[in-house]
Amino acid sequence: MKSAPAPTSGHRLSPIEATRASAIIEETIEKLSFLGSITPDILQHREELSQVVGDEISRIIQDQRRLEAKYESLISQRSVLKVSPAVPPHILFNNPCSRCFLDCLYLVRPNQGLANKSKFKENQREIQEVSRALRESTRSLCRNLKDNPNFGGNLLKIQYERQALVDLLDETKRELKMCTYDSLVTYVTEGKNAADKAADLIETEKEAVEEVRRLTTELAREKMEHTRDVAEQKAAIALLKEQLLQVKSKTQIDIRYARNEAKAKTASTSRLYQQLIAEQRDKISVLATQCDTETRVHDETVTFLRGKHERLTHEFTHWTDKYESDVAAKQKELARLTDERAANLIKLEGLQKRWETEKRRLKELDLLKRDEEKKQLIAIRKIQIAYRTHKALLDEKKNAADTGKKKKGGKKGGKKK
Image (tube, rainbow, N blue to C red; front, side, top):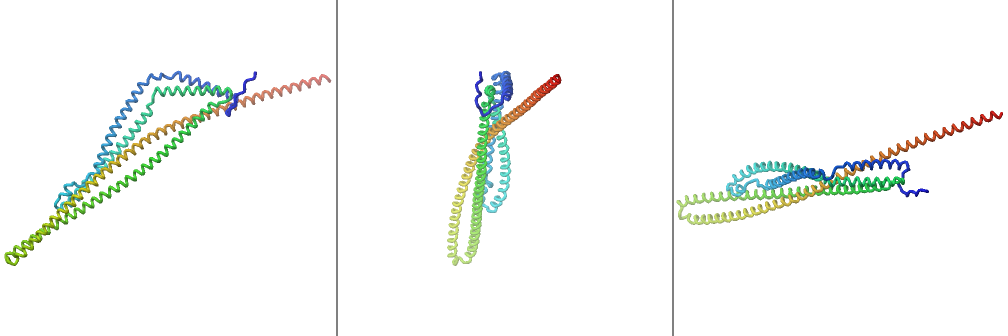
């Protein structure tokens, strides 16, 4: 009986190659079966390992909460240091002497500013250290969560993948009997397609990282603009304070001069009154009227300056409140962007690990393919050598037979003669 024809395929091997590959696959299946038989029980040590890893994760979470609380405290302290005034209000508004006021203004403000600046720098340094510790804690937590496998699930997955590999090798072995290996080609093609999808996903993540960098740059620009606006507002407030100081000093000088002038005129009038009582009575009335006018002007001037002082105080309070609300809003926005950036970094780290794993797997497959090609080349050379040796032996036997026939023919010819 004639055997049925083998199915046509785009990937075929010679019978010798198929036999060698089938022997290698059969040996691989035996080794995988032996490996499955010596695998430990799935549930034997799962609870102990899970307890150890769980304690480590709990400790990392507690440390992270402590660092977050410290970070919030430092941020609040930084906000207080930013808005603290350089000159106390009781020195700024209640000093009656303009000269003393100037001395306090130029002596107290630099010392206060230097102290606040030193504390602010120390606060910034501590914030950077706590932020770095938070990043390290987050990385450690993510690493532990990713490296904390479900041991039972992982072992089951290993068994499932091992069994799938055995099934694939069995199917390939059956196909090799017909000198084909389509199942193996299909499996490799699907793996390549999965690698291409992973590469596309990595490219998408790179674009997301670039977008995050752009948003970070835009945030820095917004912060610089906000800082410039705050500086301009502070300069305007300082200018208003200087104007208030000048007005107050000028008013005090004018009042003091008017009082001295009134005293001098009163003394002069008193001396003249002793000499010219009758003549100076009208002048005394005029001077009294002038004194009343000066007093009324003085009272109205004081009332006007007090009203202006209250308006400036109200404007100062309004701008201070607005500055605090703007700083709080920007801090919340910064915290939100920081959280989004941390989440994107976590996703990127996971995808990078997946990409590295896939690269290693593809490299191993390439090494296996090269090793298989080397073995096939060696087998081809051995077959060629065996064929050439066999052909040489056949040629020698044929030549020996031809030589023997010629010798026998020569002997018969001699006898006839």
